Image (cartoon, rainbow, N blue to C red; front, side, top):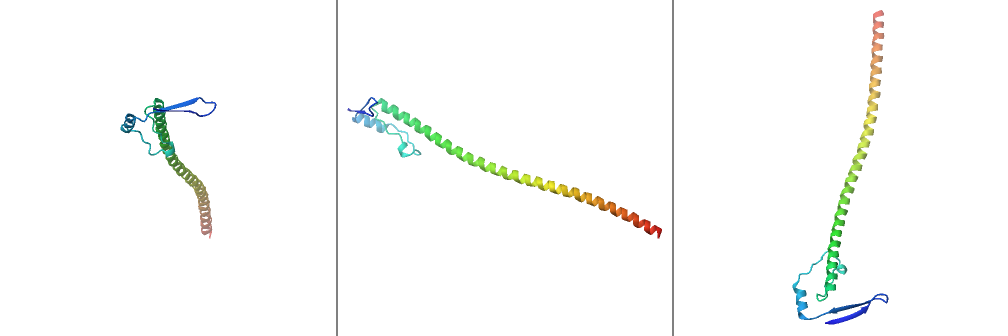
Length: 143
């Protein structure tokens, strides 16, 4: 068993690390399947624990748990970004449709007004024509 004691900083207590290089612990490390995190950057990968130290194993388990959570959050963020793109595309389509609708409403309003004016003009011309016919009839009748 090898033991090492270090002081991280003057205001922190000493940290003591002990580990063993006996063959049993090396075989045990090789036999247990370790989780892998292929999507995780190398610098964020959990460091293999020293199996003979309970604290090292606990830190490793915590690190694996955090790596899993980080991976889940990363995938959720990617999904949310994709969803955001989809929603932005839908919003853009809706805005285009809204603009087209507004243009069609304006065109309808203009055409409706033009139709009213044409109906009024037609009615006035029909009335003038009738008046001219009556006058023409009277002139023919009096001649």
